[in-house]
Image (cartoon, rainbow, N blue to C red; front, side, top):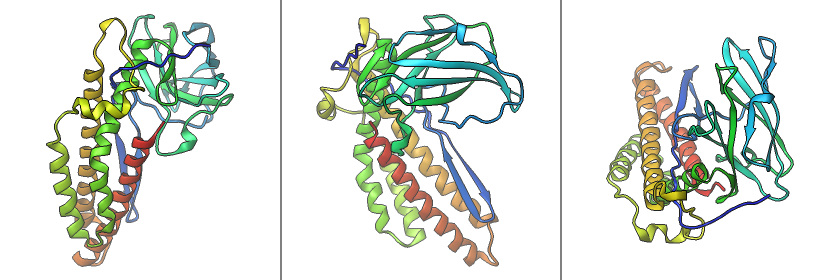
Length: 302
């Protein structure tokens, strides 16, 4: 098994970081999904009972790694959604798996990187461990290509183009978070709900105006960035892309929490306006704290 780690590389860590907020019984359930490639992000899922017979597609798997073993590849209709369920194993003797790339169609297709890390240490895959991932998958004839496996922060096996984009973009996002986290963390000292809203709005304005990363910003990561192969992009360009996606994620998350506070004031539970505002502010503080923890986890993720 061969792992390659080189500098410099740029992170095209496209985070597509959508999240869902449901309001029920005066409470909000936050379900963030950390965007993995710029196109497809699917979270870790427990295998649930299929609603149709499983069809093995293991014969269609083309695995470009030796450290990521495909144990099974089953197609089914899960709640009427055509689904490919992959069970994989981290065969690395000593490294945790943090991401892998899967592609369909032809072997040269770009595919999508599946991020396994988050603020939870349990989301990385330890050596020898099995895990299951579900993907929307309609075509039962196209090849299933495992393009690369990424370990820790910058070790990888397989397609170096996919790996360099992921690794370098992820560091771009970490550079963004290193700039904004100290101010966000200071929000924990604010107890008044209206004052907290004002501070969040001010921080959002400053985050939106942050310039792209400089060469000095890259210095702490020089030994971890990965040179893109065959001049397919640059380290700086990939890092900048990850920085921009990180900025977008932070801004959208803060905006969403503010909007949900306003929605609770208008439509939430409470006998009068004052009660609704009090409930909305409690919710707002909770969700700001959860957002800060999320950002901290992304910055410190391996």
